[in-house]
Amino acid sequence: MEIRQIRDITIIDYDHKSYLGIACDSCGGIGYKEHDLVKASPQLTAYHTGKVVLAELMSMGFTPFILADGLAVEMNDTGRQLIEGFNEVLSKLSFNVHLTGSTEENIKTVQTSMGVTCIGFCSKDKLKFKRTKTGDICLLVGLPMVGNEVLQNPDKILDIDDFEKLFLCDYINEMLPIGSRGIECELNDLLKDNKLKFEYESSISIDLKKSGGPSTSCLVTLRMENLGIIKGIIKKPINVIGSFL
Image (tube, rainbow, N blue to C red):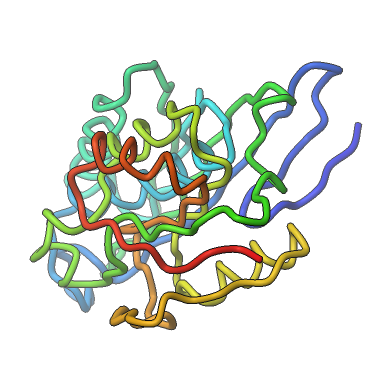
């Protein structure tokens, strides 16, 4: 059984027709506990942390079916509130994802922290990897935001249902959620994978190095003639970053 790492996803060659994909993320210091640096509800914290791993899998063509949380907090009451957030993000998907996990009941905790793992299946012919071609354009869908910016700009960030719409769109070649490394690093990985060069648009005003936080934006590659389709299904900021050479 072959196991390899592609970007943020561990991919297992499951059988002759399908891959098994595993995505992981962590979050700490965001909540209502004594030593949390960013004050936000546990429900919202879990919602966005769960969104990250779901989005990473869907962006490569995987359909998630299990979300596992490792909560470094007590069940009552922070753990229950985090679980509410996970259930909320899962409720927005059109397919079922099973939630499982664990809490910390032995040691008193003073800061909210967690790890999450998501598992999904993908048909081998649906894997969105090394599919970008010369002449494709690159879009930034949503805007990179982190910390309190995420709470203050819900109209500018991608939600989980936005990722599902992109996941279901047949006109997209590849998708890369923007993480803590920023747009430039994610784009460089895309160029390396596809052995392509890139020409940036001359009037870009977006910080290409800024952290994307909890997958608030995503790079999308496609043909120019299909740009209108994306604008028709996603009602968040869409910027053409450049084109592939």
